[in-house]
Length: 275
Image 1 (cartoon, rainbow, N blue to C red):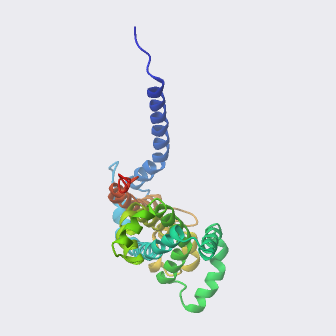
Image 2 (image 1 turned 90 degrees about the horizontal axis):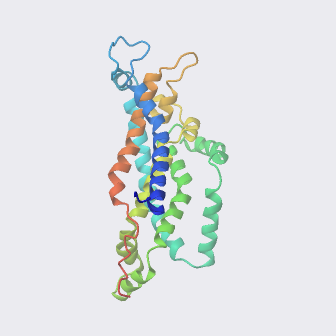
Image 3 (image 1 turned 180 degrees about the horizontal axis):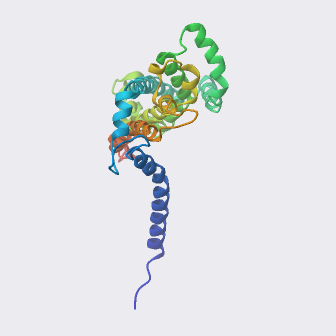
């Protein structure tokens, strides 16, 4: 007589099936983009079902490489500045217990709840006076400001999982507060740092709203603006649009693939073993 599968096993298979369906649904738009990017365009003379003419066109006849360089420059600068500022700020939120720290924490919570659109027009007026309109530097400043509150909260949340007793042990051994922050807290916060870096990376890499308001010169466009430039009033070159979309998707995929192995849960779980 055939034995019925345990309830736990059936539940695992159901969860697996549900995750599989969600994954397939999420990947359908990506598959469509890839298919359209390698499909011959309306003006193509190629007889092949698969062609890379669209990629050749966007790299040779458009400013795609310049847009890619602009996006990478702004995004990497934003990630670097955000992590450098958010790490010590998150440490203060995690370890501080004064009223000033509590007020600062509340202020960050209020700031991160405000949509960016509410500050775009005042920032445009201010940046116009400072000569930062149509500037990658000005764009980077806005991205840093818009992502800083969430980045600080992310760093503070991860540092809360690091036992203060580790720092106290370092202080007993003669380390300063800053030294224990560097050698104990920051060294054990790699997953939190990477999560913060990826968040700020995606905020600046995918932004369109701020860029369309502040950027005017085509050679200073970022990739989201570059994709929009292919849409014309009467006709749209969908092959070129999808080719640029593939170029835009590759860096986030590469970042996730390269950094995935550095993520861990409970990375310092054994640090207090035996206590």
